Image (cartoon, rainbow, N blue to C red; front, side):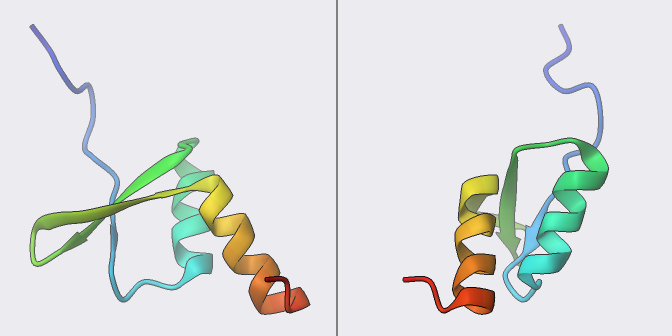
Length: 61
């Protein structure tokens, strides 16, 4: 039985918000695991990225 059909797309903890967003757009995914030294440390969603971008661009809380 197959669990995953392709390589897992991830971001690292030092990656920019724009870089993570581009990975999500290019791979048509809505959630992106965040890894550090090969271990999962979190998950970023499209909503997280939109909020971060709004905070950067519009001084949104």
